[in-house]
Image (cartoon, rainbow, N blue to C red; front, side, top):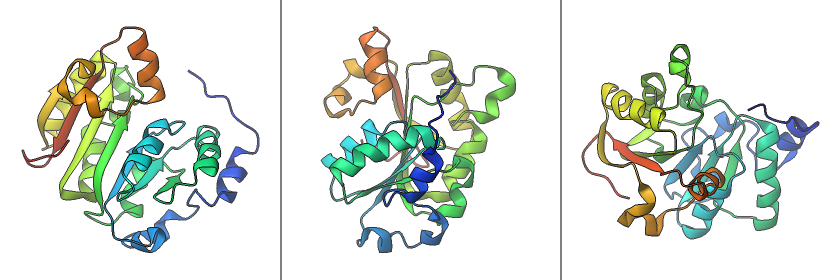
Length: 217
């Protein structure tokens, strides 16, 4: 689906105090940005920001960074944040490929991937956010005991992820193909896409991955 470009969105994102124009300057010292040493959690491909904003409200003792590469999409999240003014949430308009330039090793405690583009054609497999190429990137910034949480309604992408993530040297201690009918549903924060797809009757798949069998949900 082609994204509708909003004229001037690039400049508006750069001008926002809630979007980090040069995030590399905080590498290894995000505590200076947030004025605390609380854990950092990131969402890659955050879209309009519903998920990460609700998390930030639920968990004020955690710092959140939402990552979205398209300024026209990010601008909508910025407008919501201008109203909420959550002190533990900032945004980055960058490609996930450069995350090691932004975060020091072990600086991130949790990574969220929600309803990522499935890139169904095999020749585009490297673009999938759960591909071994991207898992290597996450490995370079995630804390040793950190976790990655992935949700999708795309059965093909989920099946691919169940194979690709272990092949990248990670473990998957927990997974489900029907999240909303599990005990985990009571604490689940839904995204815009999740609300849409689940209302259509699509089961929501989720997995939690890490470098050890220990994890927290």
